[in-house]
Image (tube, rainbow, N blue to C red; front, top):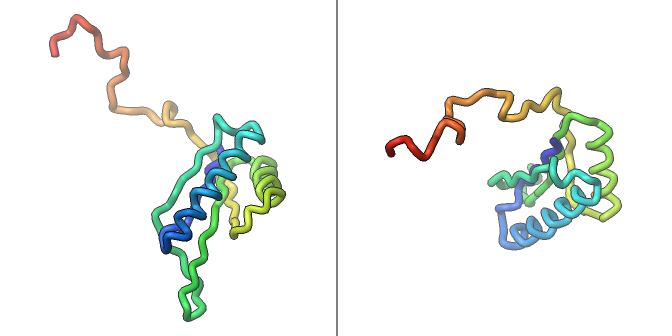
Length: 117
């Protein structure tokens, strides 16, 4: 399950508009790559600045996933679309779906119409 995370888009109104534009591009790309049902987009409420003395905003995306081939395909597709912002990649060792992690929450099957409320 690839996760495309957006960092540093909260520093200015311009960057909020840029976030919307780039997020739409990423979502469209995930669908084109056949990853629309698997991939998620995460926005991280943050500001990222260069250490240049001017605190120049430096928004970027982070692509996380468990497949190097999938990560590379995403990077190349976004490069071809001229994403135009910094990108870092992180190869995860595993992804464990929530249903395999257990839960104390009751299932829908635990409720019936004949039980008192």
